[in-house]
Length: 496
Ligand code: NAP
Ligand code: MG
Image (cartoon, rainbow, N blue to C red; front, side, top):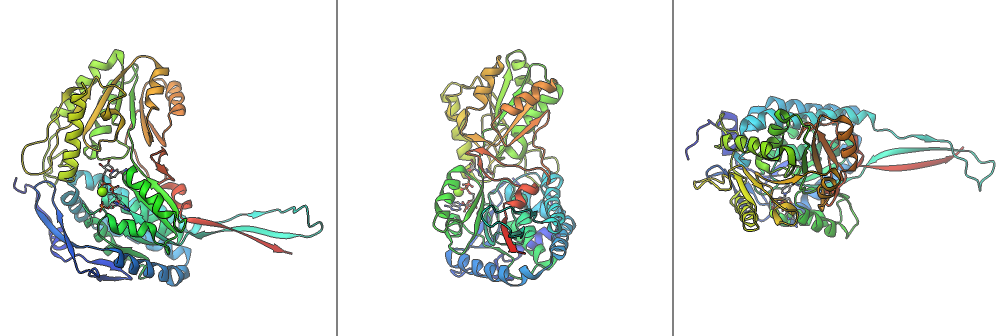
């Protein structure tokens, strides 16, 4: 498949550069001197070369981050820290087209989507967190201390940065995940070693250039591109105070184990198998396209994808019909083509994984209502797929597929629905479609999920916390909650 869209001059220039590691403010080759190739999933072409960071590179980056944390970064005023974060947001916006193109070439997602969603959301989190830097404050407390009668104390808390943070991110929203991680850490005053996913390192590297351009002191943000071994070394590193991870639940468990050595703080943003519930009184003109978007946005490669679709008996056929029509009409193609609505999956591995899930569903008796096939051509394209008449014991209903595949389940009784919807090891998000406001709130309250969307789906905002119950994770991204996860509380008590 030839390239339909054109790569703009800025993106072309970036792709043609050698990509090294950012350590202590310098772009450097890896200690081992090796590189790895970055692939365009729309055609399998190599589009760039990136340094392969390993344990010794992580060690250097941790040392740089430690020095920056104890040195220059701790001396910058809260207001100036905010100003620097705001500048990063401005630079993201000024380079939005280039970032969207790089994201599309690296990940496969449509450039139009990256330009409309990923890039502005990335800028937004830096701007939101820029506002927080000057509002990080403790409290004072009236003490009584019963065993020191007569003594008076002045007591207060202060908020201090956790320290050196390792951040490990996945390939589904490379720029946005980097930004959701970096912005709160920097606002809190932490320094960072960022390990992007091996499949999609490019926009994190471009962001690191912009961060350098914004004027952050050297060593505050270090980027080590590489594979899982680099992430594992970072997660176990004794000089790292916290690790923040987004990715699979399986690797999340490894992160927890690795962090145990020095009991570093851990936050995790993991998988999901989110229920999306359409009641019989829903506005179907809203719910049908909404349910399609819930699963097909970003090719289903979303941790919060509405991947278990519960449809009330009375509207089951009509809803399935409507979503199947949408699935069949989605324009698959290369991400740079402005007409493309869905690009390729991120990698051959991911396509094979998704196809094997579809096969397992069909073998277990699910009915294919739409799609079901990969496109037999270059690139990792998968048809938007609907599996109907699934049962809760099927693998496709229990496990995260992380592709454009929704499983449909029928319900008629609300109690039974709630039991099934909560019958998952995950608890990231849920969707509720109904005209009955009271019911919407009641159902929301009973769903074990970190986010519930009512008559909408995939709505994100820098102010609104996002994260999981159960095995979907620990902690939250975005909002004040994310900031707090990069802060320690110090209690200070003074005898007056
Ligand atoms: P993953 O293995 O969890 O990768 C996420 C990040 O962790 C990557 O940067 C990865 O590096 C790194 N990593 C891998 N092994 C590590 C280790 N032992 N210690 C520390 N870091 C490590 O996810 P994946 O393999 O890309 O995708 C597999 C499945 O995970 C997907 O099919 C999907 O179900 C799920 N997933 C979920 C999310 C989410 O947002 N919740 C995102 C992506 C994937 P490498 O890139 O070098 O492996
Ligand atoms: Mg992996």
